[in-house]
Image (cartoon, rainbow, N blue to C red; front, side, top):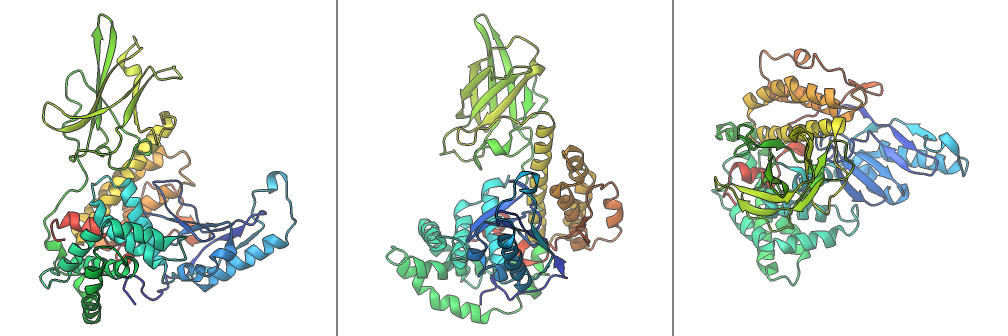
Length: 506
């Protein structure tokens, strides 16, 4: 069996709430919240939500058809949870056929079985994480390398995910040439120099095997199939993978993956700065820095113009362009709206730009510039909601940075990260949260502070001191809040993340 689906390994007796409501919907565990707080997978019988801030934790599930999910439940949650799901589902069917009024949404049955992650938990968590990174990572990642891993994992989870083989076939067929090149590169003895190389080589070769079985008739099928015996020979020879994980990764040079504000600084005369709500734009369409929008007004005899520039990724975009909406304080409708065009500014930096008339004659500070894409358009978040959205974006940036340090096993950076987040992002998120006492993300960020400290084994750092200002929930029911274990395989880097650290290996 591939290391992508290892035998089940118990995790210290965590209990999960399993409930059923009067209409038969069964829920497992705690809902992590809407994206980017969760990474959804549509599965047989319902929806599985992986928490990207704790992919090693038990996922949340919402099952509208528990019978259709019955066969994979023990493979993700273990036998006790699977039995609890059947029990509460049966009880809900035996309850009154119709419950009206305030009782309608309340659970009719609840159990708290022990979670034991099964062999499908790891590939499901890694698939959801890879899909989440493709949507939310502020760091540009190689999409074809992400697809190599995503396609292989879809193939592994066939039948758990409806039409998974068809999805895998489409994805792997689209990147078959890249997969073949990566497979040949990963088999070279000179490729494996670090434990991360060994792990990501295994990802590539697993996808090679899946593609060889799915892509019959594809022009690269013969070559992929020919790699099969070599792949199997390499698997038979794999030894001491985990021993290698504590070695030379720390020798890698430090790289900052989180983009810092560059050409869009606040010290440019006449320019104001703003930010982008990631929920309003397509992934990768804009650069990720918080101060990535700048705008200014031009007074003309025939009226006012607003000029807006938004930081763009280095590569020339191929998707449809974003647009801008400009709001004035107290006005329910935009005072300006216009599409943007891609250009390079006077410093030869890539950006999206727009110049359009604006129906506003008051102070500049009354204006709000909102960047959006027509396929993601929704009312702009303002006030407390905008503050929370900004804190969520910073939490996502911190999570991606933490994944980098974990990939390199950089213990000193993990220690620094825990301190910086404990003094910055975590209390800011707690202050911005609309309900900090019950907000799962608040507690999850604080738990990552503890997890990074634990993984770093840094002397002189006290977890109680780091979390001294934490007023959020510290328990889940009658048990302590889950602290992620960064050394578990759910936290290993994706192929695309590893290639970003060590470019041109594949």
